[in-house]
Image (cartoon, rainbow over the protein chains, first blue to last red):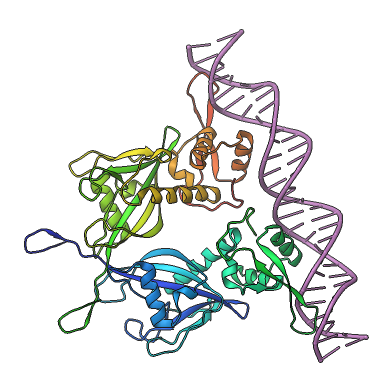
Length: 230
Length: 230
DNA sequence: ACAAAAGTGTTAAGAATACACCCATGT
DNA sequence: ACATGGGTGTATTCTTAACACTTTTGT
């Protein structure tokens, strides 16, 4: 408790930070965007991009600033953003206890940029991470679990796929996120019954085999499924 | 941006608050604990119990303090506590923007106490609330939805029922939370297949009719269901 | 004996799972 | 002509949903 010289109560808030778990599918793997810390604590270690939330900024504004500064990715380029959880966390500064609001962002095209301010931003497969700064391994696991369940009751994968994609792309996306294989015929049958995607007239040709139909999502925004999936 | 007289950056965090949505089943209705605000803004209006989170306190410590002070309920008496969401919210003080971490607490026996510090704490049915202070109606709806889905894939109802209860009690709890009726035979069959509850040797006698078997939950802690419910 | 809630089973429809072959293409 | 991934259907099992009567008790 802090009191000023008139003995009235002075409220001092804790440090507030935001951290973003930015996920992208690369090489049929779910990957997470990390930066290499420039300062103590954990100098040189990999960490989630994040930063202080100062008075006057909302948490998403603070996230926007942290992402832009440290990774060169604009929040507008994030295809689906969702708040994850707020952690009471070990402080990143000497003032002790801090509180961190975390977000998960799904991304299709956005790529990090190298600049004066960015901190070596790179994507890493979520399944093979070394020890990160703070409790960030834990936060990433939490995000991964949230995403796993989210794709079973919503169309959230749209935010990880290009506008047009094949059913194989779609299935591989599910398999990468869920971490196990799915039956091709059952997957296609069920997904097509859900009325989330429509076939286009276009085809995807690649390699010495039959070309695949390209599909697109009916809506590029979150929809809930009538029957949940998997 | 604030700078001190050496022109180095001074970090000033936003106001941080916590609010609790404390839910209890009373008269086969889901009810929420509210307090009547003693001060501006919203003086006299009903609101969720909450308060400032000062530096050095975790969010649950701040919640504990706010609940104890304003409702006389000890956090230890809460049978299941879960963080809900962190809202960027209109400030409750003149310093502008604030951030509020919200929790949902499920309770079986805990009752509010009247004292010098408590603010007329009372339970109100969640389905018939007047306009509350801040965005609290919205927060309560959010909590209600979370609870609705939570009871379909976990044993979370245990935290709203007495240790021993009848299958009718259990069904009424589900109906009160979900807001619609369930088929008696299907409910009982399915619930008993889930291996969450065990019959005791005791009976519940009340009124001029056949007595009911009393059951208890196998675990008084959160378990996930093998097959989800409803 | 009557009123009131407890307790109990079957059938039909829908959903999930397991599983193997032909098709269209590039080289 | 062959290698490669694209595309398709059926049978079985499990799950859900709909539905009505008998039992036990207190008064």
